[in-house]
Length: 274
Length: 264
Image (tube, rainbow over all chains, first blue to last red; front, side, top):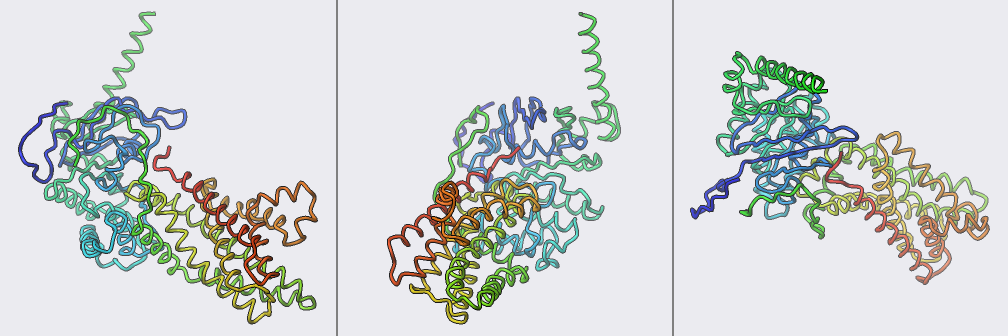
């Protein structure tokens, strides 16, 4: 990697001579199974990168590795210039798990108040916290439900509470595991608008996973995954052009067929050698 | 802001910040109490059941007030232990299964902050429970203690802390709430049988007496009996109280070790 020692004063966000996430030979083992097999990829800063692939292909494991909660990670995985899981990253990453992780027996605001107090503790920060909480609530459009118990909300509303928690403290990197699953089309559109606003206005890097291919069109860049490997990493346009297809879905299927054919080819070549 | 070259190492375990952050600890305690406030039935059960049991016990031993004195004093120490054990094991199990623990540990929260927060919140509930139960036993039910009722309260609080610690620890070995409640008979009942409540510990089979010597509840009950029989703070009382406190701290540390930032 280039390390250009620039003498310019640091503007905000700080000059980034490295991508938000850099992986080389990233491997994760769960039980007897290798879930991620030597991945190499980069996630550029300030952009929305979509992580797409069928259920069970290792998307969640990859996101957990980046968030620093996955055990048995080997290879290189640097996040915002530090090894993944570094203590200094804990306040710089917002991570939303697939199942909403909020307290069902607290109201929306109480949930956010608590997580805000963990990110930015102390009485001196009370005003700033209050502002952040109100901001996060309006970001996910839950102002009318702010005092409702999280457990009484619908599935989509609860997942938005979980997202609001990740937005507290304006993280530099947002890792969102299937944030739009089970949401109606209007909400999905609104959330994607929010993601684009966050990336454009705050310079936040977003890594968003989905197994719905039509969401791919809304991302700046895509990582297509299958069976613990990266099939392709490119922009949606470039993927469609390269495969000569009209949609990302068709491009994905094309790449899968290609990979299967290549594997079969390899196999038969090995056998013919024997 | 770090400007160092990217380390080419795989993620490794990093040293945890040692000290407990007071603001994060109190925030956690407040959150736990807020959760409880949305569940008034649990609060009522936690606070009223010990009182009802003491009332029941008083009239079960209507003809022998001496027996009520000794069993009643022991129970004042045992109730907070059992209640806090149950509540903590379920609460932390929920925290583990709901994903909130994973979220918290991905945030800048120290394990010590989380555990101290729980201990503080449940300690406050235990305080209310013990004050009510002790007051009822001593003033209304005529529990005859030679020593100070404050010392009874102190032991009750230490027991509550021990219960919190044990609950936190066993929740790591339960993958469902069914399993968590089954740890109650597994962890608490043997201590209940061997703590000297039913028969003085020296009268037990020597092997059982030996086992009872290493179980913390034995010292909780011994401490209560010291207060029952002596006017002043005896050396034995201090020893018993210190042993219970040390056990609670030891188990809390073990509990902290079961909180993993990285899981498979």
